[in-house]
Length: 49
Image (cartoon, rainbow, N blue to C red; front, side, top):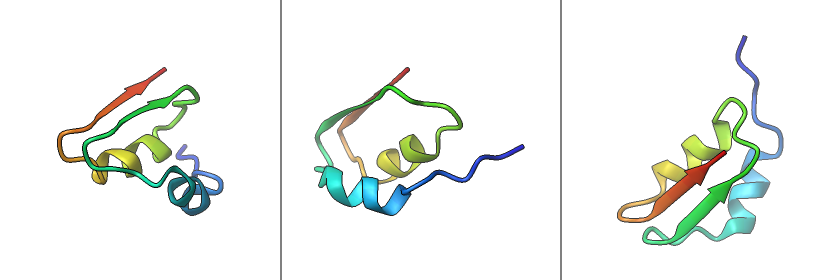
């Protein structure tokens, strides 16, 4: 069963992602938010728990 990420757009907008930044997802779950963050990174890093 897939879980649709809640408030995905609002969360991503609030992060103001920089393509070379470092981000931490401490509520990894189904990976929806992490997937979107990763799609916006070039040389940046994502650490997920």
